[in-house]
Length: 477
Image (cartoon, rainbow, N blue to C red; front, side, top):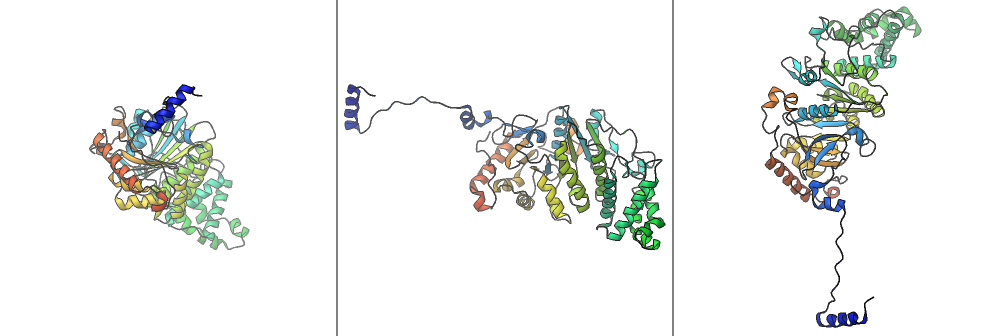
């Protein structure tokens, strides 16, 4: 309470000047408020535990990501989709991410390497550096004692074997099996599993049984033996391709002994297979199911399954169904599935649109590199990106991408160390300008374009009809 003299003084001052002087309160602030004022000092948006990806373009903060650390809190699923046209840095991101993850002792990675140069896959250099021999699936080498994976490996459950056989046939035929063909396959598979006991059953046994079914098989269904033989003929012709056709040698014998499934990195080199042939999705289906039953175990390890050219999986309804199961079980078993695709239109406009949507839904992390304007808009609509992100995707420079981690959307510059550079770039990629080094002017330009785009679309609900997502920070580093 003021003393009488002070009260009289205040009243006189108010009468003369119309105001009373007040005492300024002391300034108080918190760490969070200080970070909001000066963004480069703020903690990483996704936390500070995991692997360093690079730097946020807007604030200059470090960008750290780890699906295993974020799962259950910020991520409903640990799976990741990487999109973008060639030459923008997808491969470099995959490789540095894997190398950095392998620094943790409880990490293990499998890569399906579908690209390559000079007769080897793109991951050959990294495998050599780690002292690992890639598992090279090559029809020509297989004939000379190369690597074999047996779809009827006893480590795969009987149900898994039959599902895999159906998938191989359906992918090759381009349609589902009818009931009669499915019955002939089921009967042949059951007979082979029961009768072959002194060795691993192989595909040749299935083909032989389809061509010459047992009389008991026909009697059990009260049909003629010739009918059962006719029902299984098309199935036998398809499987014959793996036994005596262009894919022979890789899957028509016992699984090669000595494949090290405990190595930190396991690389399946598929670079000798025509990427545009029906053989690629068949190979990926066989490798995927074989790994599901032989590699993934309920232990404390965190596993990463990275698939290049993943549209072969997502765009086939039959292969996609197998991998959907793998992804669902993977969340319980500590598996992060990474799918690398050039264009989203490769998968969402195909025959497996429903299956593709299901797999995309399970990928809570999306990384989008530069795409053409129409493709960027289509990608944004499918993935539910904010309007500002859709607008800047065509303007992104190599090495910079839009990251959407369960709605937390940022623009991130991928950083590569000098030690990593010779391992993560192929000869062709080394000639691409702008990928290796930081270009501050280009980063600033991207940030300014994104900020302007954000300001043009202040209300995402009204303009685009989506739930508002994280907006870019306006501070340009």
